[in-house]
Amino acid sequence: MALGGGTWVTQDKILPGAYINVVSQQNSTIELGERGIVAVALPIGKAKGEVIEITVNQFVSDSSILGFAYTDLRARELREIFAHATRAVIYDIGDGTSITADDIIAALEPYEFNVLCAYTSTSADVAKYVTAVKTWREAGKRVQCVVYNASTAPDHEGIINLINTVDTYDKENFVGDGVEDDFVLEGEPAAVDKVLLNGTVTTAYTYDDATATVSFTSAPADEAAIEIRYNSAPAHALTAWVAGAEAGCELNESCTNMIYDGELNVVCSQTQSQLETAMTSGQFALHKVYGNVRVLEDINSLTTTTAEKGEDFRYNQTMRVVDQSANDMAKLFNLKYLGRIPNDQAGRDSFWGDVVAYNRNLETIRAIEDFDSGTVKVDKGQTKKSIVVSYEVTPVNAMSQLYLTIVVL
Image (cartoon, rainbow, N blue to C red; front, side):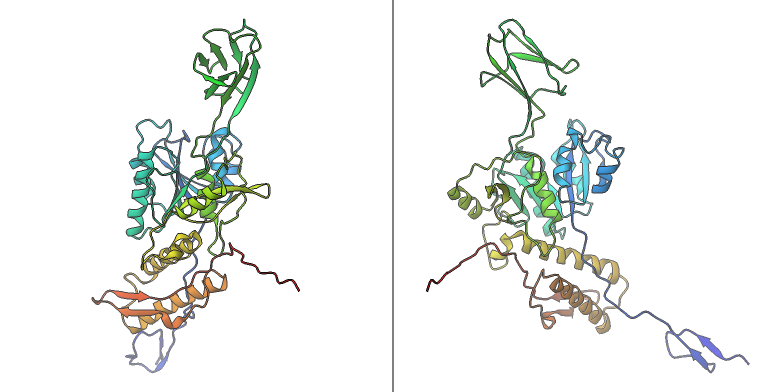
């Protein structure tokens, strides 16, 4: 007679024999979520109204994805983003006609990303981005959004309100002779942004992009200084770099004092007093120091602190830690526990173990400090299907102020 054998779930076998289960040791499966992802709407012109996902390596090496090389002028915004980001989720607005901010927001919402770049300076559109991100965060989508010079202070930890503009353009200079009224541009731009005669802006001209010719209504005077500008960057152009820097910044790092390494000419005109006002007003600023343009302080637009949102919530390094933790915990529950693990003490103990392991990892990389597993509570909720979880963390922030006393003997 053959002996019994195989695997077992309950100890109810009849035949004598060995019933053996071979299983892996139960280790925590939760990992830190991916960082470096920016969502943005840009006039790519490849697939209007569709979303294109691209990595930095693809951006550099595969021009077929966007339809132009990474060195092209049309790629300037993406070069700014990819100075620090690793992946971009792009809504292609094409020529921009019939595309609204609502269309962009709805299209990008389902995707995973760290930072949304509101690449616009239109006040009404900026306001829609701000409202959308506030709504997303309340619903559990913990992302931040970089906006340019919001007309109404967002006063929210999810909104980074950039105040610096840029002064970037290509130009060609000519000298009038009182006779010639046509001037051909070597750069062959698709459009001309501004024409100056003797330093004064004029609109008395036409531009033919087929021949790259600026034709004045009447010939500029003899010795007149002519400056023709094109390929200008918009006032909000710096939002692309800031979004990439914020998305690519790790949990244990800060953008404070980061050197601007893009290709735009950043206008840093604020005085020290104005910079102080910007900080207290929740405005993200860059300034020039030691010969470089640097981030003044890695803050968001929150200015009104409460018992629920204290001073620490003003700093983006803190928000990176708590946002990443919230997103990762949601992902852990949804992929590992939802509909699979029984809500008994053993199941809740398993979730407790994953929470502790995750925060030990944060502590190891110095994103948080002094983590106490004793603060982790995983209790049964009000229904048989729910659990209630709470724990305490102390995020670490990078040094930004030095108070020094030197004693001379």
